Image 1 (cartoon, rainbow, N blue to C red):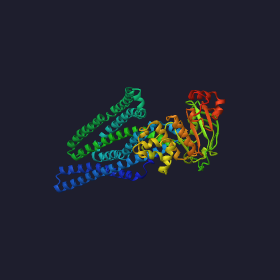
Image 2: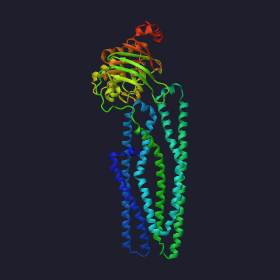
Image 3: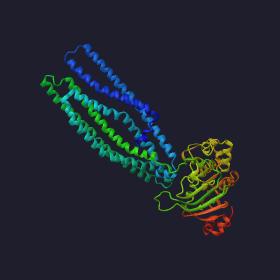
Image 4: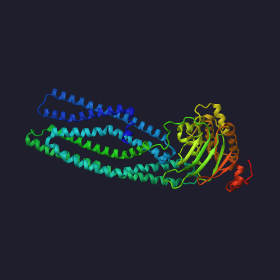
Length: 580
């Protein structure tokens, strides 16, 4: 996981190294200053001349300037390195998600993926900055200060033998009790974001059922749960302060008491005033270094959970990949399913599809009817290889879909899904998802066939009308027609309409089907519908039940052979022989 994360540093290795160099320089200079200061104090006590004092003072000023400059440059370099690292990490996560099959996406909720790309990446970014700056500086300051303390103080350095283990044990204990709460918080963030996402997307439903207060209470409870865990953890971490103060004052009292007695008793030969001053400074540096190490431990443990969650996304193996030597041409729009069965997961008890045998010639129009959960959508998702069949084979253009390059296969199959999705941007930009090189005339022709040109022309800005996020400023029927037009622009070998005219009226539905017949006659058209009228003129109609094909034939054949189909016709059209 760490190797994978560090691979995101890439072009930001240089500022990382620069930061480390300046941090080492800063640590060396800061530990040298008390040593020089102690010598100056002793020389002043011995009656040093003004020029000597001024020259030593100039050296101290120069060292302070070097320390300040080094710290500032290290801060700039580490900020650039950590921000760049986070940018690369987010990009890699986004690219990785783009390689996922539907099976992988089903494993992670959308709210969890958003949290991992935002909150978790921010935590890892903070940790990276801490690692290349504070996590290097604090151990160096601790090591250099202890060495200099023994050089300068001798017996007085015994105080650190007592204080350092006591402080280190206390800080580790505090961090250990705080960590479980921090870990729980990140898992709860997913649920909180999921609640926000549901409410934003379903705002009309919430208001329609006057459930605002209920949703507020649910969100407040989730937010309160996170607050309680954070508060519990922060209360424990807050003990760092008192513990630090105890150790600091113990060190000061020990050094002042023992040092004063040694200085007075030996007449300044064993310990001098300058040494006492240096010992107090080094003691402060040692304790502050330990304090910083404890905070680093807390931060790294917090971000450890984020690293793990990001590692899960980056380490996920795409369920669908192109073969080593892929087929790069789809011959035609023929489709064949032979002995196909499918489960959404290995642990699933029930098969979503079972024993499917189906042959569709190129250019045919096939309608699929069936109740909710009958497997209609699952069946068509196997054609562009959004999922792989658990058993059996799926052939497109006479070739197993597993042998195709994924981009080639999917560019030959256009799907208008049940949940139509438009993106922020203009209508023109959304349509060009189907064909980036489409001319204005081609777009207008596709929209005319999809019965969308009329309402687009009614907008003041026409095809340059802005679409809000998720297509919130167009109706369900308008959104469906735009998505159909987008699919038509691709001129695919196979067009799949997954209940994509459910929000339009019967007349518009008929106009769209007529347009499909004339615009792309060679394209195989597979239409999933709830209305018999939407598929009754198809070359073949499939009636699905419980993941299997219950009946198959033309409208007339099914009227005579399938009681279920006749019942549907009676319910929807008032008579089996009713025609459009």
